[in-house]
Image (cartoon, rainbow, N blue to C red; front, side):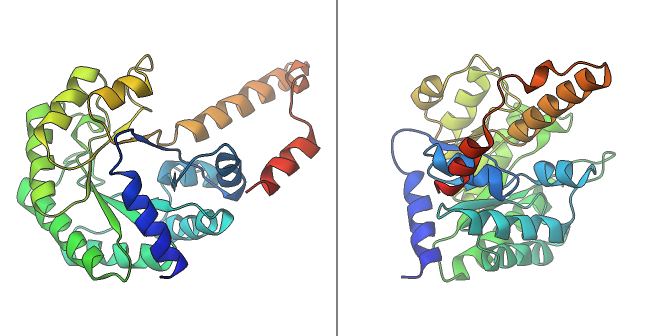
Length: 271
């Protein structure tokens, strides 16, 4: 078994245990190593985190792939790739990116039903299902047990229709997706409704949800994977801007409490 195949097998198994998999989202080698040092079992890329690093609203296809490789090479942990809508409308063309992501080191990836057009943000139902089915077909032909996640994007693009979200996730499950994901669910009741309506593991992203919800509560309702999206990247940028604003005003109190350089370097080495 190759190293990547072993990672993929481990990643798939992490979705099959009773307790949820905590899947944090680093955006570079340094943050990946810090997370590995904290004991996380797998990592996921964040396309928005990549875009934030580039100073743009959206990262390019190649930037997302390059970032996947960087994070994969930074630690021995399995990596799931955030591929947005796979940068194509056509099912076959979109599915091709799944194979490419695997070549860049990913052992799992997501395909979403967001069009990228704010006027018509969600692909129609039939096309969305065809896109997932095509991605599954490609994933099943890969030489590793690749984990394919299908995302229903209604709730973060102004379509607050839980019934349609569930209908889509059920269809994506029938099309063969391994994991189901509806970013933008905010309450435990919404999450419970999704989990109880589908037969595949469900990912919940806490970057949009009620922050008072705990991991224990998510496990109790059957959530199998918990991610955070670009929240850690946004947190880092907030700390940066808070310090920069303080400095602009002529104060430097933000330097108090910073971790020693040697401590950070030791954390980077503790992979």
